[in-house]
Image 1 (cartoon, rainbow, N blue to C red):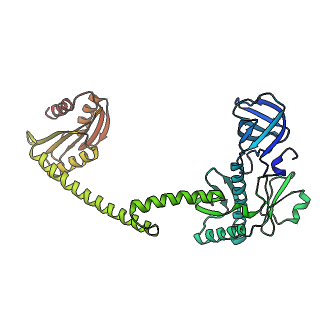
Image 2 (image 1 turned 60 degrees about the vertical axis):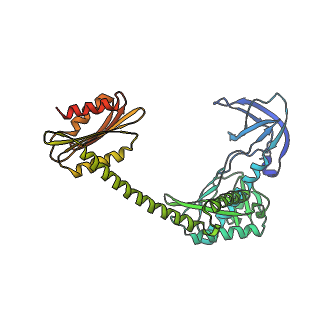
Image 3 (image 1 turned 135 degrees about the vertical axis):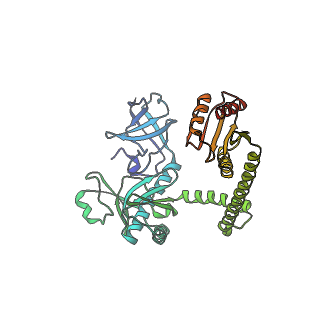
Length: 399
């Protein structure tokens, strides 16, 4: 562990060391191995550090077969002397988040006996998986309160290397997954946990913990939360959006939800009224088209061309027409820039099959469609003008 400087001092931002080797992995990525490093590699739920080696960006850090690989933006100039610089903003954020996870997990354990069985530190928020099937708002609030009280007390966060024989002296929160190089992270009289991540010196440096949401994941509950600077960032972001909403809705912050609900209710009522009006207009249009229809033997043919009409409206229009007359045959064509769409329908008295008519029409426009003997719809390429297409359908009807 002597070459892992981040265990000796998690606050180390700049260090000098020697280059052991530099080469490419199987994917062609350039990486450097150093005699010692302050760069934390991905592991234990915590993401890797970023920064630079002699000014060359470190994009990723992994521990592979016992060596820590620093994946670089491009090859380092040959030099044995290396100056490493840690992206401190990213490192300290990870320290805050990881320590906050320990505190929140311990709070759930202390308050309710809920054990943590999964942890992920993402770029926006963290998650822990609790070994329970349900979580109430009251339970979440109490655990959050206890966690923030622990931060307020500014307790020390200690690290200790231990042997397996020494573990019995500590009330560990969960069983360890390793038997050598055992590293404990301890908040005295609150949390004792095996962990290889980086943490601040005290709980106060975590600043704050805020639970954002939770959801059921199979037979577990996944908690989303943030810590430290991320709490302020979220607060700033939400406050900006709230200020925008207060202006848009012309309502004070405390009344935004009620105002928005009233607007939604009003919109639903308007949509209902519009739907009723559209129904009345379609009914009027259906009667007009039916009165202008042409007689064919004992039947009445309604054939019409529309431009850029909603096909669902034409389907409703065709059904409305057939509901007004049992002797009608309806053929409606919708013309768009590159497509033709159509609806075919008949009343109960005509015997011709709309499926057969549709099959004939689809072959003329390389189209697709379907339906029943009494009602069909389809569409395809605009290989004919709308007038030619309408004439083709009428010719078939008049056979």
